[in-house]
Image 1: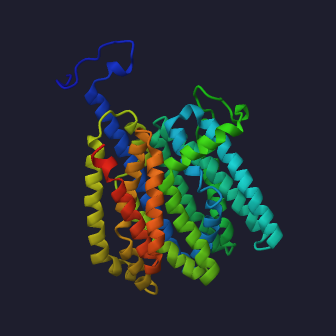
Image 2: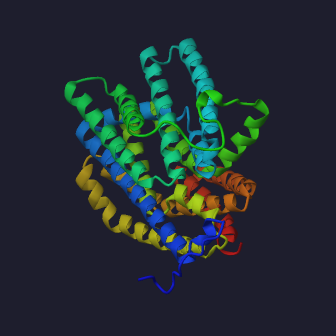
Image 3: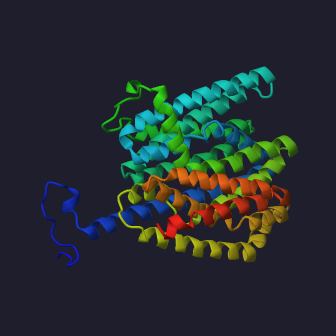
Length: 407
């Protein structure tokens, strides 16, 4: 029996016109729910990797893993996520976006290799391992986001689960065998990519090039593409830069153990962000199909309420939980996480702003807001790094309130 709210479809030439509005809303809710389930899976895997591995391997060994992952991430962080999101928006141009990503990776990798050879700052094999890790990561994330673009969220769920298991089990296997842990992140990423390619079609349907070999990159088109992807992924670039540049800097100054402590604290903040209901890739696609903004306002209020609950939970339970997991380093980690406990909600609100600015083609305004908040945050650096981060994200959130509630 048909629902009264869902009348029989009227067979019109426009396929979208044949679908009742309630059916569209139900499909959108299911897709958002699946995307959020994927986000919760990522949070669970993050919890396992960044809180279990330091206990199993030791904080110093975990810091070495973080250093190698950070070196690989810095080769792609400025462009990888942005071009992945562009592929979600326009899957027909996915091969073009992959070609640009690979060209940028090759260029940066070449400069990094020349610097390493000239300064003798790193072992050659470790340098090649970092390059292999970055390459496989760029290709892996490309295919994952193409699947998101065509609505294959369940397939991405299983790929993410396999990837998380590999990134957790490979370091444990290396530790058990007495092998050098520096190679473990790259091995895990390579195996994840091999599994993905073995279980999905490589071809991508669309109106653009059908293979990577058919892509023709024109230099005059690269600049606007790079600007657009940087605008749409600004939040991720900022977060990644804070984490990975910090890991490398702390390692250089204080060693692997201090880097491990820093990474654990930042992982706690990332975990709190992942728990919030903000499946950005899914919402980015659905927002461009919606003519109203009520859903965004409800999301914003929900994120604020969830953020307040997180802050209370950290204050009441954080020290006890960290004392149980990291009895030797609980105090500095707790104070760092407590100071940054408001950041996850502000990060999520910033991503929601990004989605709305993209919908209205006003991403340049988002960049201006970021520059203003960045200048004020830098001015507050003398009060401490945590104050600097709070000022930055706080101003970024306030500057975007108009877009969230009055646009």
